[in-house]
Image 1 (cartoon, helix red, strand yellow):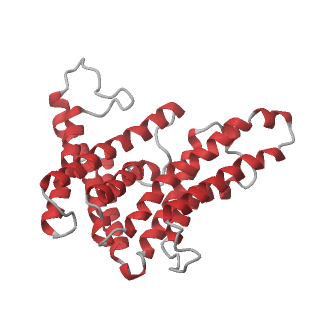
Image 2: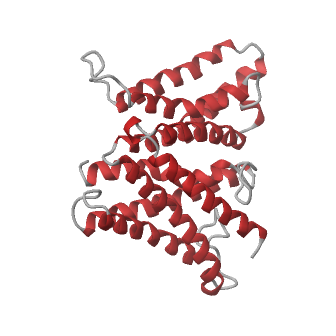
Image 3: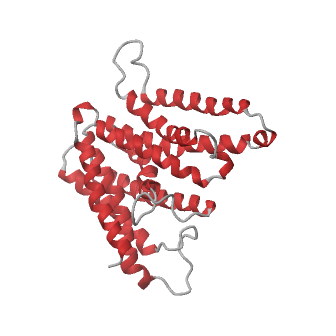
Length: 298
């Protein structure tokens, strides 16, 4: 067993229990541990994602505070919106409305601050600087907002546990099946199934994809009322999570390939940066949240 394999297993067996603890601690208070964990993760991921962009868009005084703040802003506001009082003056403000207000004001601020540029070279870089900062507000911020919103669903602790398992079992099975069957099913001269990530195999994609519906089916059978209805809507939810989890990994790979970087960072041994470990749940969170709300009308 290689050192990288050992490190991946340690991260898996330590990281998943930590997420599980965050998903069950103090559920009567909107799962504060999980909310804070998501906000911190989004801040760190934004700091890492900034290195996908040219240095002139992210190297400025105070960037070590501004860039993480951009990543944390949207999920932090989303979490705070769960505590809106049920008073007539604010009860019409849904989380989605608060999100729209936050994005509008934040993007307006990003644009407005550009008028303070003084040097000519900085003026010519305004569009790329704005693009970078709006991107970081959305990825990871807007995506992690949806992870926070899972807390608002019925039985939030179980929903979060199922979501985490459906995503990370996808990732783990894709890795395991790819290692075991990938070399056996790929011809030596055959191109990879996805050029953006040449180390991936079709066997790994299939193994990972099937893991997500299996998790949803088992959870639906084990916890009555969690996913109302028959097997078909559960399979649809599982398939959406399976596809979006795979896409999340590939999307981040595309960003890294475009930026010519191997990993988003070195924070997690054996896996690279934090963004390398949360790319799948980051992308899958909106699909899980909206699918549960729409398919099961919760």
